[in-house]
Length: 471
Image 1 (cartoon, rainbow, N blue to C red):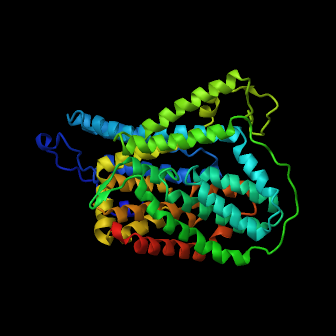
Image 2: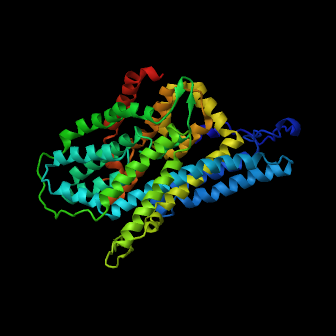
Image 3: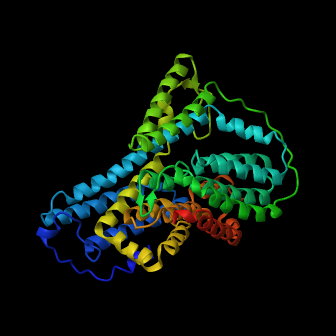
């Protein structure tokens, strides 16, 4: 954010030529409207970063700020008799969000449906019953996090594996700390090589970028598999020697999956396949395939309902499931992470407004023009360790620098795994700090920063070596 303020030096009103500029945005970076919008977003994001301390949900400040920013822009344009330009720009940003929203609602609904059918609980109890040592559990939970997060989001994956770690080794704080760091790195790395694994990869895929030497399509993301694996394996191999070489005590009852669980899992993979085919074969947005898959899930939920199945979701934060209700798929839709979805709205609309004002063009010139694509994309990853990678990636996509496919994959990788450098750099890290309160902390994660940074650097080197053909 400080880089943007470098360009804000005065309150000069830009010269306006209504005849020539009626069809394109005006540069308001030096006007009070632009400066006010920039300050509002800066303050709103400070509030977002303080969510853990002030307990104000992160969506509230950015949604409010988005409305104010665009109202200021619209007022200025209307006062200068420049119609329709703002409306067209806002609708463009809204369409970007609408596609992302519907895609994520379907994905979250499937994840919630699988959770309600005890798919994840069955996996958790199975792992506990395997009587693994601390070191074996360290590797198994990390590997599963790496493999599950490309399909499920990294937050869900980290919480699932975190529950296993706490159930088995909750009394051993050293094991919990190291395992939680490992989970954050593995979940973020696993999400980086799949279009479904992270919001940022999904945004890049849906943008259908035509790079200077090809198209960033669905399959090119998997070229990041080796770099992502390196990002996890390097720090995990070093941390392995610090994990206690002991076997935990404890036992658990194996929980079975409820009826229809495997069918829902199968429908989820079919839905993903339809999203890919809608984009690759039909040239349509992937969200079409996802919404069609939601239709299949709705029909199957009707079958479960007429068969007498009940929804066993906890209706209270305490998890009271003593009063199940008839099976209803809309119960799963309602349990989507709406705070997160509205946060995405606020961020996309805010950043879109700043881009319309001209700030992203200045930032793109400063970073990509001054540092070069490779260095700039590495810096983007470092920024995502402090600032959420969603606004960072949306800003890059709004700048749309002229880069090769390899460079687009580099920024996808760095934005995805850069959040592992600090515990606050990703949703997975923040969630695990709450789940393993007292054992996994910000400073506990910070002690292992040099090791994590080594993995970050190694993953970039691996990408430059193994994917050199993409540059």
